[in-house]
Image (tube, rainbow, N blue to C red; front, side, top):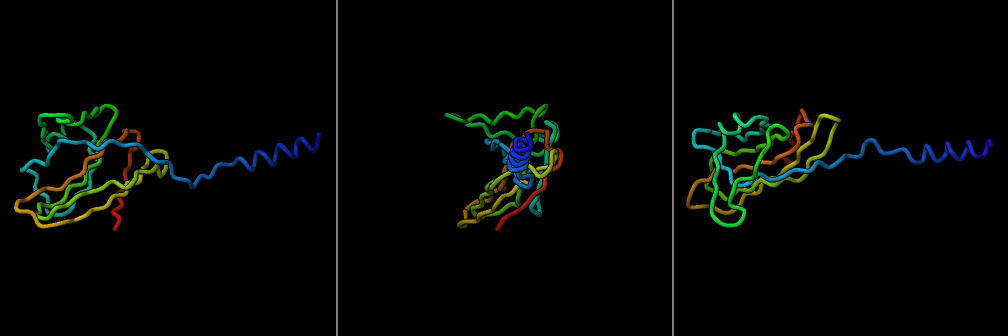
Length: 145
């Protein structure tokens, strides 16, 4: 009986999970939205948007014909939007989501990169919109180089 108890303890401690391991959080990229002209962005802005009203004040829809032409649907009763917005530029600029991981039960860490390219003949307002669950109350932004 003593040997069974020892084996049980060994198995119990060997099955301990690594609590430092980060859990990936799924997200969707919101497409076919643009930053409204009334929004003046002088410095990079990182924002978490939790309501349709707030979202509609900042973004407009850019539907177009063809496959995937409608804006991505967002259910603000269950979802929120992580937004990265950059100042107006005439340089090709893309914002890439690297990952979103759970930091604590209610917190998430969002990692992203910005890539600049060639000069354009017109101005753009670079932005990235990600849709995630509202269960994450605090989002920490981390720009990677």
